[in-house]
Image (cartoon, one colour):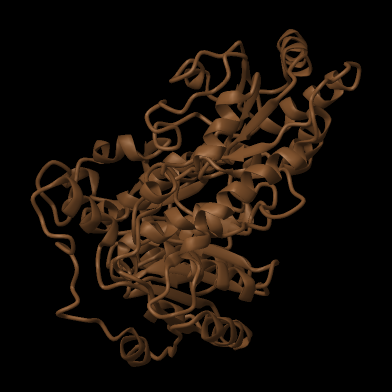
Amino acid sequence: MDVSRAVIQRLTANGIDTVFGIPGKQTLPLNETIGTRDDIRFVVARHETAVTHQAWGYAETSGRMAATAVIPGPGDMNAMNGLKNALNDCTPMVHIAVETEPEIRGGDGIHETPPDTYDNVVKENLLVDHPESTIAVLEEAIAVAETPPKGPVRVGIPKNFLAMDVPLASPAEYSRESVTGVADRDIEAAADSLAAADEPVIVAGGGVRWAEASDDLRRVADRLGAPVVTTYKGKGILPDGDDGYVAGSLSGSASPELLELLADADAALAVGTDFDAVATRAWDVEVPETLVHVTLEPDDLGTGYEPTVGIVADAGAALAALEDALADREVAADDAVDRAAAVREATGDRLEELRGSSPPITSVSALETARDAIPEEATVAVDAGGFRVWGLNVFEATGPRSYVNPGSWATMGTGLPSGIGAQLANPDDDVVVLTGDGGLMMCVHELHTAVSEDLPLTVVVFTNEDYAIISDDAGRNYDLSEGEYEWANAPIDFERLATSLGMRAEHAETPDEIQSTLASAIDADEPVLLEVPTDPREPQASDWMSE
């Protein structure tokens, strides 16, 4: 059978209906095959860096995996950024890299890079050595990507294999299960420790989202009377806001009140998180001595914090088992909602001085106003940057798949590509991208992709004409000027830029203008960019929230 046809058939057989990439001579056999089918779509990006971020946004907001396809060398290496982002976030993806032909490998063929170059940015790096094994290797890659903890898997397929017509080995069947069940002894010990606590707390990460265990988490929080602190990747697994269990997000800008909630608790349940150095400030955040840690990765246990009870299990299975165990125990804790509300109120009080309507407004005002204008059921894709750090404190996520932002990799330039992936995965939903001007300029070419693909997403760009979070540190801690990395002397006209790419563009400077203009943009059945200038001299969230 023709190898390229078999590759596409194998993708669709696994429910993959979207491939992101930039075509090259090496990928054309795959593109030709996709063009003959109506059950799979090839989305052409404008830069390979965006390709893997688009697939990441697709998976993060839908729970379904997408594929990527790139040429050797430059295409593959440009895509590495997004592969590492997906690896850190445990986001499934199958990355098809068209490889140099085996007979000239090592001879500096065009775009050649050694296949092992990519070993450290993917969950697994598989190379097809013989054309007959192509489909078997591809099926293995898809299964590995979908097996928790999920992640990106690279499949190197030599260029000349794709055009061959050879007998193909049938793929094996894979269970896609990494661990099953939960140790009864560990659950009993965890239930004993948590039920005895007067002020327990829960730290919840992205593993809860991928386990689709938000309801289980809510029930355990209610049973324990434990407020929930989310990680970067956990934000949204339970809705933020009033009358909820979520006290806030653990980050470099977490308020003292949130940190005190963790430090003063007498027991903690950490579930679906690896306690990475970014969220915990290199493990400087104090957590209770009594700690129950649930993770799929055994190596996570004891990294940064020593657990009282360590449980290697799926977050959903562990939470369900824990709920059952707690049903037979008397729990002494107070109401979780009240404890969470007290932290949110204190955090809100810290922000009052930054709320205002006179231009240029702060990121706090801009983000809170944007939240009011964006429908609760909309999907929001958030870039990295100074505004995102504020957003962790003030922008309320409304559900498990409603908010996508990079985790510990924290790469800029993800917002727009991930929004494109989100819109393709959720064509009937409103999708809003929140980005800064620094982040948008790292992927501004993808505005054209949105227009070309006729995607009705809304891009909100907060402009301060500065890499402000860097300039702030440069001016305070180094012998550099306060605005060392600003470009106010060379301003970017984002309205004209977007218009030149075929996109409708708007401008808003006050909360009232943002409210009305953003609502109109979201209602429009076309891609729209909204520029919102913010104060380039506003304080940075990590500084302001620590005072």
